[in-house]
Figure 1: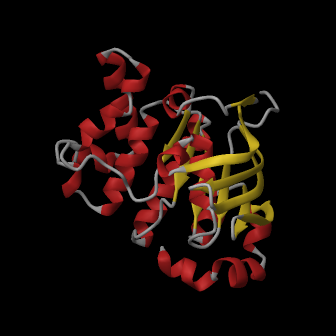
Figure 2: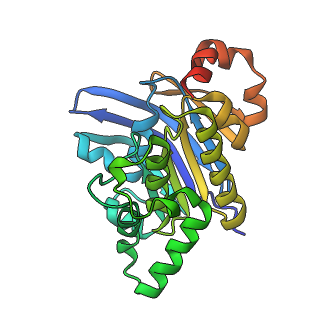
Figure 3: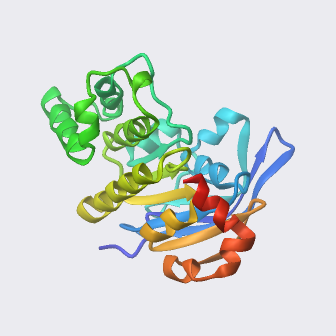
Length: 254
C-alpha cells in the first residue's frame, strides 16, 4: 500500500464574495483507509474546508485563494466537481439533501450515473448499498421526502457510495438525529472503512460520536486549526470539551 495520503490540504485560505475570510492557513492529512474527524462549533470553517476540497465552494461565491489540495498525490486545483466524483472523491452535504419527489431507490441510482455502468452492475451496487442500509431496502419505493431524517441521511450517504468513492467528505452526519440513529450511521461508516477501505473526512460538532470512530482528529476554531492528535488523545483533553466544542452542547446536539 502506498504511503501517499489520500488527501493532503496545505495552508489553504477560503474567501467568500472576495471579502469574507472563512478558512485561513488550514493544513490536514487523511491517510488512505482512515477515518479523520474535523471538529469545531458551528461557523468554525468545517463545511468551507470540505467544500474547498470538493470544489463545491464555487457554487456559493467562494474561492480558494491560497494553498493547495492534493488528492491521491495530485493537485486537484484545475478539476471540476464532476471530475472529482468520477475520480473517487464524493461529498455528502450538510442537511440531508435528497430529491424529495423521487423514491429512495431513484435517489440512490442517481449516484451511479457518473460511472456509466450497465444495469446489471447498477443492480449489484444497489444490493451492496442495501446490505449496509437495510432500512433503505424496506423503504426503497417510498418517496424520499416522506422518510425520516435518519433515513434521508442514509439515502444521502448511500447515493454518494453508489459512485464507488475512495474518499467521502461527510458534513455533519449526526445533525438533528436521535442518538440511536447517529450510532447506527457511524457503525455503518466504520464497516465501510473496515470492509472496503473507504476513507472518510467527517466534519462534526458531535465530539463523542466523532472521536469514538475516527483514528485522528483536527479541531477548527474561527477558520484555523487550533489542535490535532489521535482521537484517543483528544477525547481525554478537557480543554477540547470545554473551550473549543462546548462539550455538553455537543452531546445534546446528537
